[in-house]
Length: 222
Image (tube, rainbow, N blue to C red):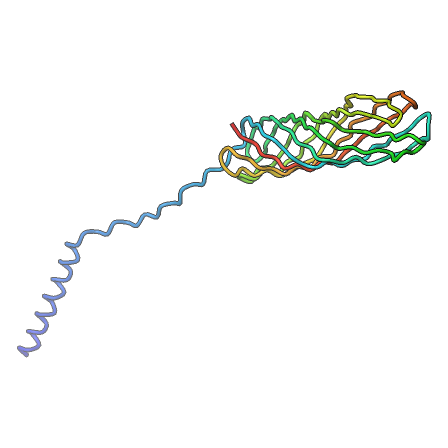
């Protein structure tokens, strides 16, 4: 009997001491999980300048009006130049305008149809265009289109030469990647229809020129 009473007293004391110790322990602070820092999205708004290098190929619907008649031929060559533009971003949409100008050595001839070799050299070309794109952070997919011009020189083996500037339109698209906050790299394709030019030398001739071009571009965003 005494042993039972003693064990009960020890158990009661142990329970009371444990409760008192638990009451004296400081409350554990709640665990706060920090959200990861937000990743800054690239802002395409602003002005930019840059240069481009590429390849141009096209069709010249050449007609020797008073000679042998139609004798279309191809023109092709490299082009290099510069551009300047501005973008405005609203959400994922990017609106812009750009002007560019290129030197080119693209040329071709009719192979002497009608007894005279008629040749065309596209000496320079350029455009002023609107752009519309969709941005995925630092990657921009865009379409572009507007006015295009080309300075061409016709020569023939009889000594006649004609230089003129054609006016037409251009359209295309590309993808641009902002590698840094300032440097932007892009690859662009455009089709251009420059219209036609007519001149009279040994024969009356007409050139109706269009082209395709692919350019690699580097721009500095201000």
